[in-house]
Image 1: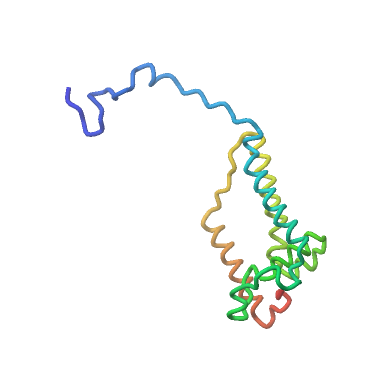
Image 2: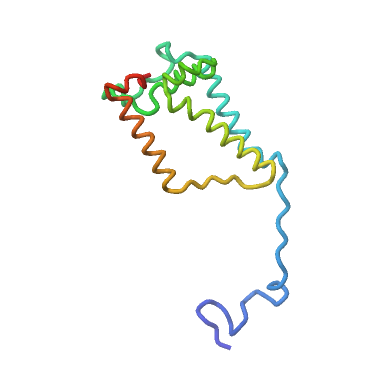
Length: 162
């Protein structure tokens, strides 16, 4: 018998017998719920800790947080400018101030909470997390960030200044 370049020997595969080719593999048993929830719970703890810190330490008091480097160097607001003040207001239930400080963040917090909840529900049900945005979605998010940044730096976008 002569071997081929793929490692097969005339109709047979090396290391595979007839029984292993016909027996389907049984699926692995599902992981316990607590292990499937470990990463979402860890993320929740990290986000809750960050919001608790920002809620406790007021970003309007100087010396606690650094100034945005883009704003310091150019005087332009980046998409994140006002995010800490907005998060502080959000934690304290002042949603209008949070919307004024960083409208994008104030809208994103509830949307991210919904995505996290969907992740937890899928984990409890034993399904893998599914987040596969298409390129058009990613371009749309990038365009939204760009438009938000440009408009908040134009004279008529003063209502978006933090």
